[in-house]
Image 1 (tube, rainbow, N blue to C red):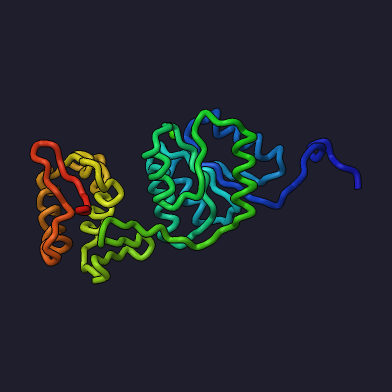
Image 2: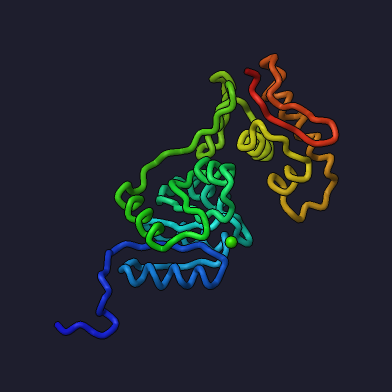
Length: 238
Ligand code: CA
């Protein structure tokens, strides 16, 4: 059988890749480059669309930008892992701070590359992730005696299960992911409520109070600190 012009130079891998990147030129060049390497490529321009594709289809690897409209890359990755979708995720990080990368791995990403990256590096990482395959590995968060399972939305302290509402769980998760750092009330509102929250910001204090009663008080040792005028910090005593 004769090869058509379009087939020349193509070596189909049978692999499917999802690219979630809002920057149009980068999205297009990743698609063109990966297709030239024989990957079947779907591309999404925001986190909501990316999550939809990842839930509806099956991919061998997902390339996921972090700063995305609608839903950021961390949240997309977290939502996938919560749905027990273990497709390997390669995060495309814009910043080169450690925090960013640790955060990416914390939310269940498998690897990351820092922008600007070379296409060859991305290809090599994809190959290695494909070899590794999708393996269930819920990223449990631990701070001192506290252990939070993002996949099962459950938390224990010193092995004892705690009964928290969905919002309390989200707040606790946010504090645990940033343990050791001060978080402002506004950051909490932006991440645990949403960017358009227009209610009373004192809601944060109310929820911090509830968390303390459930997470700290019964155990006689406080992990949640209030830093007057700046915010809150979760820290396990040495
Ligand atoms: Ca972006």
